[in-house]
Image (cartoon, rainbow, N blue to C red; front, side):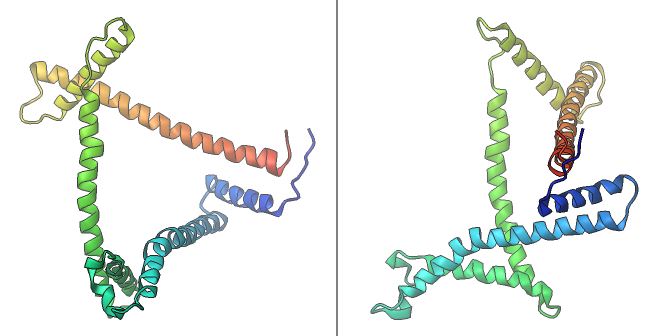
Length: 230
């Protein structure tokens, strides 16, 4: 088995950073911290540029630019503030100003102005997420739980529906704290613990497998792309 080192500088750079990250397996060291800080900085810069060109420019800058460009008619600048004309883009100045207020945190004396923008963002986001989560999570889960226990001609689907119903009811009973878990309620809650542990174990196993797949990908990069071992 012969080595065929890659002549690509970007591959060497990726291999170096990968080895810097793996060096944490020995102990915390400057190479690992360098790779960690570089990753965080590059990721932050990438998402800032991405959001600027995909969110701010098409949704704020270009609509306002077109609005002011069309304000040279007979009504002049006053047409900007007449929503009855059917153009509401001038009101995008408000979220634009709130976005600029966020940067006042960089200046100590006027940093308190950013709280107004944060309050609007948190309030609007909480309102949207409340209705969205209720529709997407709660209602969807209730609809998914309403399934027939017996499917004619399909024994497997029937058993799956019965196990699902038992697991759902017993898991909910585990969180019923108005009564002490004794007797039938105690048996049901213990069965609910079993279903919950299976669920948590499956979720944990899925997370571990996804991380292992990332590790395998890095080893393939080092052995094949960098060292040329096939």
